[in-house]
Amino acid sequence: MVAKILIIEDEANIAQLIRLYLEQAGYSVLTAGDGVAGLELHAREHPDLVILDLMLPALDGMEVTRRIRAWASTPILMLTARNEEEDRIAGLELGADDYLVKPFSPREVVSRVKAILRRVAPVAPAGAQGNGGEMPNARDELRFPGLVITIPARRVEVNGQRVTLTVKEFDLLVTLASAPERVFSRESLLNQVWGYTYLGDGRTVDVHIGTLRKKIEAQPDAPQYIKTVWGVGYKFTLEDQR
Image 1: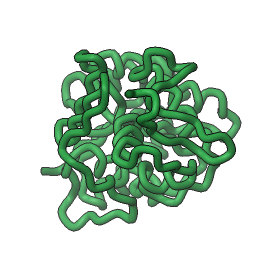
Image 2: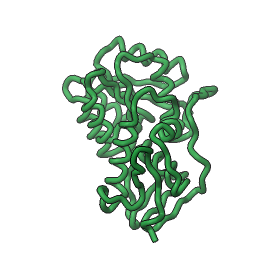
Image 3: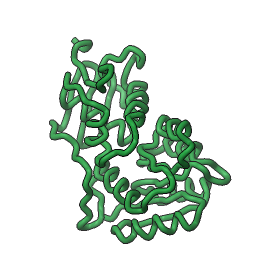
């Protein structure tokens, strides 16, 4: 089964270049030149991943992300300009899974796409092998007081109620919860969850931890499950669950 990628990018030369590299890697590719057309294609074609430029005519990337997240958990890879750090953070908080800063290598786009899709399902072109990390070995289900994580179904329930997580939020949770009390540095989480050598700082991890806490913690500012280990990183704790 070939993965279907939707590119929403108003610069035709960039969209065409990304499309060429993705098709050479064996993916099926759709393109849209603005946010409205992109949303229509998403609703009709149900792509496996969206590559989304933040600066779009008619409907910007933030609003496109917000609307996609209202009905789907499709992974989103954002494309941003170098001076848009706050926009990148806002996009991650809305539910985007990753970002690339322009200018970028089209090979890096393909690498990111492979790494993200490996987290979602075994949907990749024949012979496509990435260099990303793998999810940790774990039982099919992780159970804690008030929290149930069903790994094959990528399902999370908090106090009996299902919560919807993005791809990266789910993978962060499984990585941490599979090794309670182990302290993970930001660099370790980037390698294990993002699946490639990360060239930026750990802000991406911090943003995703923040959005994850809002979804699974009764009091995100006083978390029960995911604790900050100052100066190091994060851990999943059992101390407050007894």
